[in-house]
Image 1 (cartoon, rainbow, N blue to C red):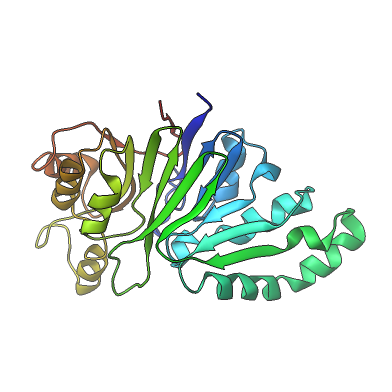
Image 2: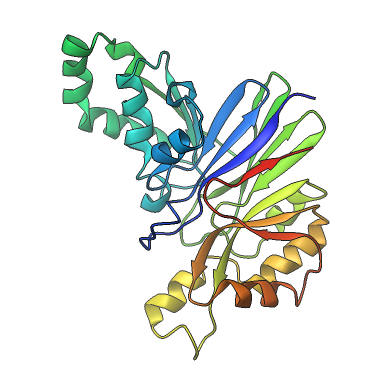
Length: 273
C-alpha cells in the first residue's frame, strides 16, 4: 500500500502558545500532498516535519476565520521565492476565491518585483482558487476528497473534509458544534481529527464572550457521542479551545465514548494502515 500519512502541523487556537501553532494538517496520500487549514506557523511546521516546502501546492480551507488562514501568505509565497513551480491550488467554502484574489492584489508588489532579482517567474505565484459546494470535489490518483457542511454557526458555510485512499479514510471536522453530517461522513472511518471545546460554566467560563466562543465548538461529551455513533476506529483532538485542562476534556469525553482517543500535538504523525 502507498503511503497515507497525516502530520499535525498545528493544534492550537488564536491564543498564543509556543508549543501549539495555528490549526493546520498535512495529508500525504501516495505522491500527493494537501494542507488542511493554514493557521499561524504552518510553513515553519512543514519545514520542521522534513517535508520539502516547495512540494506543497494544494490547500483545503474548512472556513475563512483568520486563525485558519493567517499562515497562508507564508505557505504560498515563501516556497515560490525558493522556486516552487506551478499554480497554487486552493479549495474552500464560498468566499475563498474572493479572499485569494485580494491576497494576490495585496502582494502584487512582491509578485511583480521578486522575479526581477530572484530568477523566478510571476506565473508560478498564481493562485488557482475554487469555491466548492458539498460533495466530492477531488477524485484523482485514487484519492477522493469530500466536503460536507458542519455547524459552526453563525459562520456559514463551514466545511469538514473526508479523505479516502486505497480503502482507508480520515475525516477532519473543521470547527463545528454537534451535527449529524459529521456523524454521517465519519461513519467507520479510520481516524476522525476533531475540534473540541473544554470548559465548565460557573467554573472556568467567566464571560459572555467565553460562552459565545465555546458554543462554536464541540463540548467533550458531544464529541464523544459523535465518536460513538460514527463507530470510528480512532478519535484525535487537534483544535482544543480550552478553558479547562486536558485531563478534564478526556474525562468528559469518556462519559459518552470508551473507544481509542488521543490528544494531538504539533508534529505528531499518524500512519493510516
